[in-house]
Image 1 (cartoon, rainbow, N blue to C red):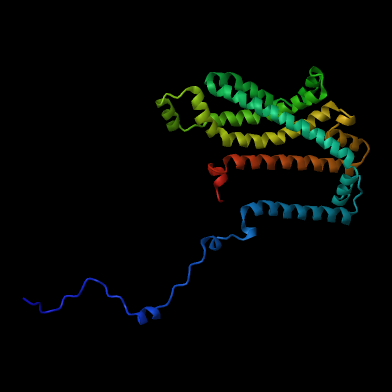
Image 2: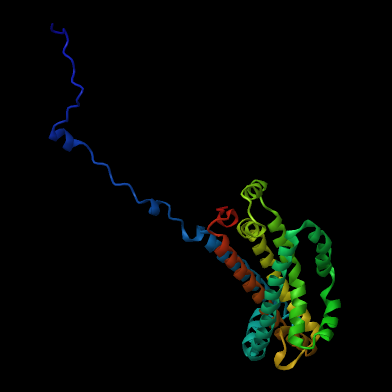
Length: 301
C-alpha cells in the first residue's frame, strides 16, 4: 500500500560545495592568556612596592622642602641630603656597627625561635602544664627589659652573650603565644578522626597540629623579628660597649654627645632599614611556606 505523502529521509543532506564555500569562516579565538593579561601597575606585587615608594618619596621631598624653606640648622633637624651624605662619609664606622647590631639581632632571633617552639610543644602536651607555666611567659613579656638588662649583663660575663640574651627575652613571648595558639587551633573533626585511627601523640603533633600552627607561627616570626632588633638596640644602650664591638646604639649615643645630629639620623635610618628588611624576609618565608596551600597567601583581595 502506498502512502499519500512522501516520507522525508532522516539522514541530513549535505549542502553543495558552492553553498559551503559561501558560508563565512569563524575568526580564531584569541589566546586566553593574552586576554587575561593584567597591566603591570595593576598587579598586587608591583603595587605593594610602588605605592610605599611613592609615599616615601613624597615625605622625603616634604622634609627637604621644610628644612630648606625654614632654614633649620643641622643640629636641630638635618635634611635628607645631609643625612645621606653623612651616611656615605661615615660608612666605615656605621657599617661596622650595623654588622654588630645585625649579628646580635639574628642570634637573639634564632634563640627566641628555638626556645619559643620548644616551650609551645611543652604547653600543648597538657592543659595543666600550660595553665601552670603560661603566666611566667607573660611575666617575661611585661617586665621592662631596661630593668632586667643590667642584671643579665652582670650575671653573663661575655658582653655579646648578655646582649643576645636580653634581645631574645624581648622576642620570645610572641613566638610562644602564637605557636601555642596555633597548636591548639585544630579542627575538632580532624582531631576526632586521628583519635579514631588511634594516632599516637607524636603523629598527631607532626601531621595535624604543626601544619595547623604554621600560619600562627609565621605571624609570630614577623613580630619577633622586629622585637629582636629593638631588644638588641636596648641591650646595646644598657651595656654601653664601645670600640670595635660597638653597635648602632653606641653610635647614636656618641653622636648625641657630640651634637652630630646628621650621624645620629643616619644610624637611625640604618636601624629602620634593618627592621624593614627583617619583616620583608619573614614575609617572603611565609609566602614560601604557605603560598601553595593556605588561604591567607592565596587570597586575591
